[in-house]
Image (cartoon, rainbow, N blue to C red; front, side, top):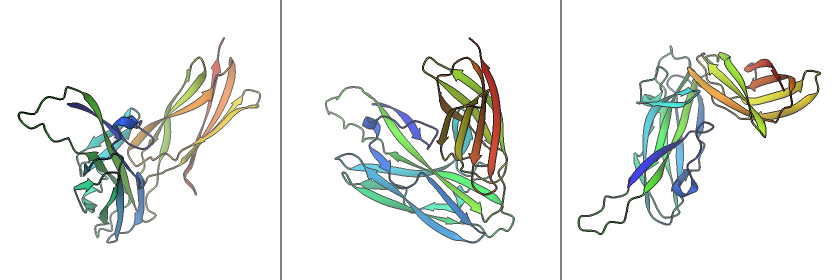
Length: 265
């Protein structure tokens, strides 16, 4: 049997088909902590077996970097802001009973280092184990291609209230179709603190009359990251439009950008 993998990373990669989803995670897929040097915290990953057969799920750690084309996964400890070495899993493998669920705990221990500042992050992967190989002499059961699902739980640790996000909007374009239009905006964070803002968009005609208003999110932007927002709009008639885009992370962390574009006949 050959298998292809799909990673479920919230807000970035579509979930594999229901037939391939042998298990799911019932706990949050983005875990945020505010800790200080020397502090210890704990949480858990809750795994749920969606099948009527026993299932083995394996857990591991890694680093990641968000890019407009999708997440880039790295070995643990390689990203400059990795916290993978601070995170200890209680188990690397768990056997789920049919239709049952189990929680795998993990501990975060912040080093006693007063130079730490801003956000540090990593992921915990959860993936169903490969089926046991066929025993010699057993009749072949045919060849199939199956999708395998791997979840990535983001673990973000901010050191107290330190650090600051630096948000930019380097690229934007309007993509028009027969039934709707899409505003694609690249958003980057070059600061040292993560932000998890709600996204708001207001679209107006040149005369100031409203066309549409929408809200999405939240989206997660760790340091050294960039994502591509795809904001669905109604089909637009020829004319000039103005758009106001706001990323609202709460408090002082509110960022915005205005756009003006024209559609011809």
